[in-house]
Length: 189
Image (cartoon, rainbow, N blue to C red):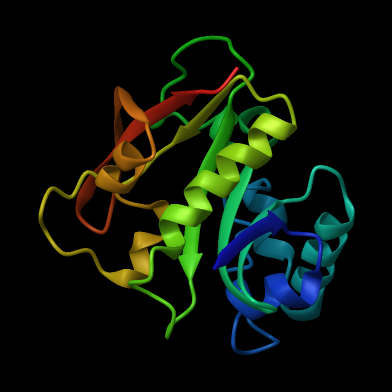
């Protein structure tokens, strides 16, 4: 049974989205969360420390999926206004509602193909609902039946969001791994 909880335990977040090398300047799911100038200056341990602080804030920076006590997946979700999507020119604003953005879904190798991404989407929506979000937006790949490079599949794929009740609200001019991204929404309040 997969359990999805707010991402408040830094070591569990590190296990799912932390880079293999502690001196790395990638991942930790910061590229859409913080301004690019700050993202580019955070390196190695400073990057990890920044995410550890996020795990202590409320709301948490996302949700984690657990198989028993083992963290097996991550979804990044936050108010759009608190992310770089607030100013992103490629992802349109549909209206003035204080929407939450769900922009990254990661399932650890060895745990894929077990429905964890579906549990993460549902858990992220529940988390947003508990924090009074009226709408959740996602910007998944519209890949049809084509395969997606797993490294670039973090944005999710359209059919998984449709399965969770999201509907396409707008096209975007954003592409990822050669696939267009669409803006999908789910009204929750």
